[in-house]
Image (cartoon, rainbow, N blue to C red; front, side, top):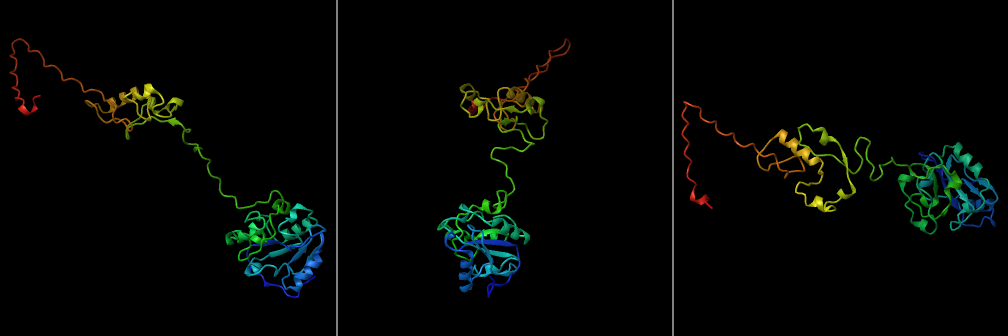
Length: 304
């Protein structure tokens, strides 16, 4: 049933198909009757399909724009097939018979329409009045509901089962690059909960400090072990087993007197005490002992 007036030439772009509903009962109304009404109202579709009986009526060639969609969206794409399904948005047509759907899908495949739903499943009516109608999704091409077309206000075709239309393996939206799951670690890093002993930058690390030591359950929080909390040498990042080796390493690298800076994370680790001054040699026979150097008197301000 060719229409006397179509929507004109197509503008080019990604191929797509839009599923619409006539808001009539497919058990009482035929596809031919709906096509006649659309032609009389000067808004023909490419196909009118009754899913209950399998009846299909073509009104406009697929290489021309139809007029079931208002605005310029119906003329976008090298293919923009508009399929009017005899049905109602509040009762999705995928809940019943889908006679003749395979022939329609093969026809669309031949024209290069990909079997995907870039905007996701259409929303049910009346929530579909508030669909996003994103132009970014529309530009990708594929299958859409009338409620997902930009610059329109249609609520159809309702919450249809898109897998019954395009198959169970048809992609719904663009699949992003996989992201690492929370808590996962790269392959070149130690597992979570592993402690690496700290060391001073620029100095070699002894083998005893280089080994990773897994955390024990009682070391998760400071204060969980009373014995460790009272230990003045305890600092996060070190254990009792690593501290002796760490202190020895600091003493070998830079011996200092008193308390001094230690490796990163252990600023108050006691350093190795400075060696005591050597005793004066005893005088040998025939050599007089040198006179003692007089000591300066201690100022009165320094006396306790």
